[in-house]
Amino acid sequence: MKINRKQLAGLIIGCMGLTIPFFLNIEGLSYAGHVALGIFLLAASFWMLEPVPIFATSVLVILLQILLLSKEGLIFTESTGEYIPDAYTAFIGTLANPIIILFLGGFVLADAAVKYNLDKNLTRILLRPFGTKPKFIVLGLMIVTGLLSAFMSNTATTAMMMTVILPIIAQLENKDPLKIGLALSIPFAANIGGIATPIGTPPNAVVIGALSQQGINIPFGEWMALAVPLVIIALFFAWVLLIRIFKPDTDSIVIDMSGKFNTSKNAILLYLAFGLTVFFWVTESFHGVKSAIIALVPIVFLTLTGVVTKDDIRKLPWEVLWLVAGGISLGISMKSTGLAEWIVSSIEWNAFGPITLLVVFSAVAVLMSNFLSNTVTATLLIPLAVSLSTSGVAGEGFNLIIVSLVIGVSASMAMMLPISTPPNAIAMSTGTIETASMAKAGITIGLFGILLVVLYAIFYWPLMIN
Amino acid sequence: MDHQIYILVIEDELEVMDALIKDLEDFEDIFPIESANNTEEAQLIVSNIIESGDEIGLILCDHVLPGQNGVDFLISLESQQDFIHTKKVLVTGQAGLEDTVSAINKANLNYYISKPWTNSGFHEVVIKQLTDFVIERKLNPLKFMGLLDSVRLSEAMRNNLLTDN
Image 1 (tube, rainbow over the protein chains, first blue to last red):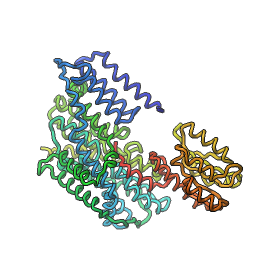
Image 2 (cartoon, rainbow over the protein chains, first blue to last red):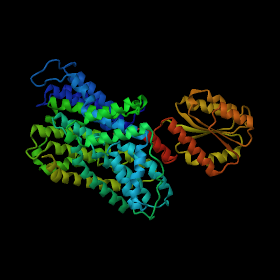
Image 3 (cartoon, chains in turn orange, blue):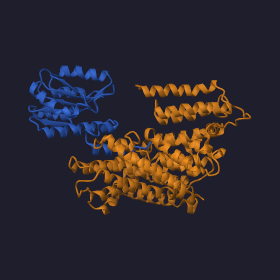
Image 4 (cartoon, chains in turn cyan, red):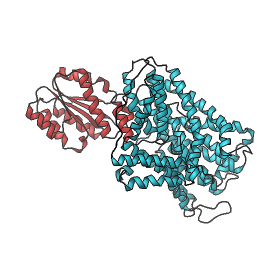
């Protein structure tokens, strides 16, 4: 295996991070907290510098927690006054956490949708009303991309939409700024659209998973009620921004809208499963059946009917589920060993007003996720929010749900660089865009995103939650 | 250095070789080009490439060569595991019907370019073959999007169910 300098640094810092706490005696932190700190440092440096793939770090975290912190592990076979060890099942159980099952349901539906071209055909139909004027086409593309990426992965949506826009880009004059505008509109809309539903993108799962461990359940529809209004504004802003910076030269473009819906029996079963599942997810608050339970229904239905086959199941992106589970698992120990509380108590949070706190969390999340995986960003920041809330150091005005949302949503607002998100990387790879153009538009959206998130956190979300 | 994917050109006439290399200019940044004047030399290059853990994406091969002819060389590669995905293109004006048929049947020939070729037609063939190679090999398409057929590569990404991280 070839390893670069950054990865080597990650490996060394990670291994040192894991061992050093064993030799220290940090005041106010239990022995178990020292162990958890070691695992946290290892995970953080591996996730940030990526000497190994991020999903591999996640399973490593789960194993280390079982070995070093569980009742069945090597150190804490008995409860001590300071630490009551969790059973190992608590850690491996995160692999079947309800949010993981919800994602699995989303994966199966998205997989089947791609298989039967539902995503492409929907795109064609939905784009029709937007005519031939470039700026409206861009708007249409962004709305469709946002909508699809709310239910499919942002990355898969971007790849699909590239097949729609690349032929348009090829038709345009070489110097037409519209080319850049088009190429940026897709990844930006996909990044933003992912915020809209719990299954839209993994950071949402991190937020929901962490909140559920605190006994707070956020139904599918409630998440949408909280997130969709923000997504609409952010998409609209991104559209205005892109068509202003990259003013189209041409006044009309043509998109190939040909193609027919697949009308085979399997495809129709899929449309049915897709429509009904989304309907019951969105209406969770009315009927009370948990979205993770609903998610099992299309899995069962599509496999029983053979619409989704064994090969399709093997192809699912399981590593994303591991990634999220590792994060949830790390959160368990950070809380139960008192580590999170210790980290939090070392900062004078009272010095910040509640609004400053929101701005700081949002800005840090946007900044971090520009360089790191969005999921890792959310995973590393959420435990802070949780312990701030449970320890009470942040004072009265601190609402756990709101701060968690701020972190989760902000993590998706990072789109400044090609490495910020996989959709950005895809758009960049087409060779249509310069990094400078992406950075210019991406920074503007990031800053607007922080403003938007903070405004929603102050004015809108409190109304919805209370 | 990263894992490399080579284009191998086998041609004995100097002028034709120059023309081929010139037409392949655009690809050279991503697909390093190796050239051989006969199949013996080609065999040596092929062995070196495989030994260093790299692979051959595309072979452009003349038929009439000193020593072993092009079609027989391609047939000899066909039976080896290392070249299952390698795209094989015959560039010739002189292969008879029988040789051509055996190249298609026994060497799994991917394309036949007859001399003289046009620049744009040649480009199209190379792009198509290398795109096929990248997709069949399930390589990460991002590196190739700017050079090869980006629509087909995007389509392949879509089918691979990429995810966010």
